[in-house]
Amino acid sequence: MNFESHWNKAFEKEDSQLGWFEENPAQTMQLVTSCNLEQDSRILTVGAGTTTLIDNLLDAGFQNIFANDLSTVALNKLKLRIQGTYQYDLTCIADDLTNPTKLKELKPVDLWIDRAVLHFFLKPEEQESYFNLLTTKVSQNGYALIAVFATNGAEKCCGLPLQRYSLEMLQEKLGKDFKLVDSFNYTFINPFGGERPYIYTLFKKA
Ligand SMILES: C[S@@+](CC[C@H](N)C(=O)[O-])C[C@H]1O[C@@H](n2cnc3c(N)ncnc32)[C@H](O)[C@@H]1O
Image (cartoon, rainbow, N blue to C red; front, top):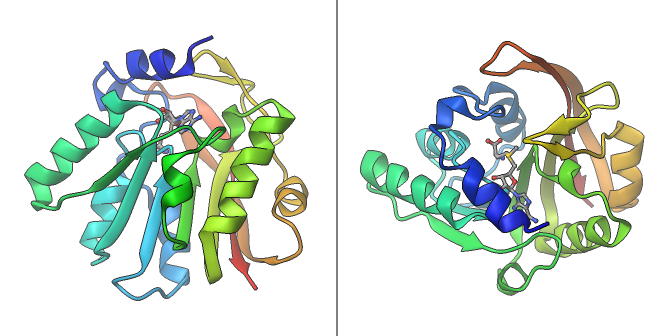
């Protein structure tokens, strides 16, 4: 399966017609706020798609934001919207989290944000690449915010099967250098009224 084409096709739809679209990423912003970061902190949103999180981060005064995705269709849409609304030149990095090349060149970040991305990686080697990248790219005292489908979550999203996670599974993958700061369950109601249970987690790299 060609995942890049799959995601590019998905992003041909209007944002509001995407099953994961959220107008207000309040749960993510709650955790971002609790990190007490400086406004020039480096924030990387992986698998960003066309997320409204970028708008919210800019509204909160953050100025050093990076957006990654496998889909160039999504990144082009996101960059144009952000340019138009904020006159902000968003740095977009088209790269595959399961086989990263450009992301490896990125200097460490103070905050890594993943909402609804990691759970698409089913193969052990894909998960290993993802966590290797995360653990090396988050700076000392930096944070990893991961929000993924919980163990009681849906089994598919965007037509793809998912690996669902518990807090313990995420802690094990991150390793003992990452200390849990906060975690909660949240049931996202998707644009079509479906209930999608997520687990939100925030870890700090010791
Ligand atoms: C369900 S969407 C979530 C988008 C965004 N995080 C949000 O909350 O609105 C999953 C995103 O992960 C991206 N993605 C999937 N596989 C990827 C990979 N291997 N590397 C980078 N991004 C990927 C997709 O293109 C899509 O934008």
